[in-house]
Image (cartoon, rainbow, N blue to C red; front, side, top):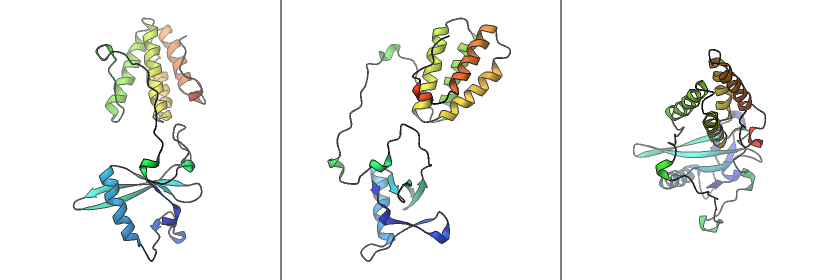
Length: 208
């Protein structure tokens, strides 16, 4: 759902607070009453055009028998994988073009690696600790270590969590002190690669 700026106005005397514009045909309560149930029923969010270059979103939450709407502004700089909001248009869903996603054949499920989700910290910790265990065991199986390094890195970049790589680099540098010379060398190399500029220009970290 795309809401045009004609439905929202900035209250200059109230800082960043936004209010719905009232019209003779439809007041703010009517618009709220339309948006709320629609968002809850479709499990969707509404993208809001605040002004020429600022966007945000409205989400709905059920509160007992009632609902509330939450407005959030998007940050000035969005992750690179988020499309340009200026290309959005509003209209019936059936008028939209079909989206096609290219998929490659994966590994057979019985031989596939265990996939962790980073929705909660447990999944992130499992992936990071696995990478650190392989680092401590170097020079054994370096190709497996780099396979996990690149999987960890690609996941972080895909979901826009670049800061996780910077934190991982900091921890790696702290942990490699007591390790053998080979592990120190590879650990320092990976830590440096994790904080490189324009990381999405480099598909993966090459093995030393």
